[in-house]
Length: 429
Image (cartoon, rainbow, N blue to C red; front, side):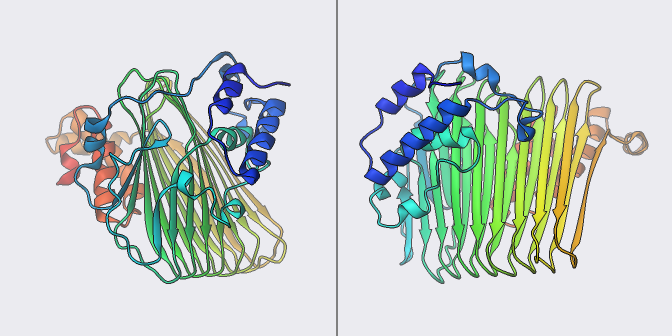
């Protein structure tokens, strides 16, 4: 590709005026996307997932519909500081941020574009993939979360992204900043207003975690089976910080999740925890990078996939242990459960180690339901459907149990249970 698609140019022209630094960065991002285009399987990181078909697809800047009822259904009366974005734009009417402790700012990113130091954490046009560059070029809003030094935010920041428009393109960009010693939980919900919304949701989340801070990030991807979901989470961690990423991908026709963290100080910890369910001909891809650039850091990474029909799941994970990063403790696992003969799982765990005194392990498994376990459960009076569902849930439970927040774990359990044939009443017993 040597020029921008017409729809991208038209979309960019609809964006409001931006500060000089952002206008320049948007232009750089547009130029990069024009040069590189949509990723294809010729690129190593996209070997199993091609977006070349998007060269023939046109998207528009959506005109949002009334989705109050759908947003209410997502909230489920749960506590938290709620932000709602409809087609990538903030809805003050549907949001309910509530009272904030001193030193905490939660709101729309568009309201902070003139902050003196935002450009330093907003992200660069040459970072990530061309998809990330397109997000930077076309993003006009997103969630902004800043927790000041030493403040612990008791209730989670809950961010709903609702897509309403068929062939609508949404490009939310989020910035999460935790100062030294801060603690917070941020939850993203990506949902469709109806079953026939064939939208593109290209979302980027930039995370900066200062020394001794602790962030838990939970993402529910539950868009309809016509939607495309392309996402980047980019994290930097300072010394003794902790980051947890829980990626729950249960929707979309095609979804791609890029998650990266870089350790910039010693004694950092990170947990990447993923669970996905795909049926029909749907496709989900997780691509992760953990950069152990300094000594004495810990990273544990676990992804589990449940696949049926003709669905496909992809996991590509890379852990880089840099020169001198002694004392590294890194674990990486990918496990897939195939429920049909035509389902497919591709896993590529990678370790790049340039240090000597490290403890690293990686592995991948692909399997089916155990026939002996099915026979045992059937012999105890369960139907075939009940026995299968119980074993599937047991497989998923390893990922669900890592979510420490009770309400969010319960929501995740309900979400995966609802996807199984007839639901899963046994999950709560």
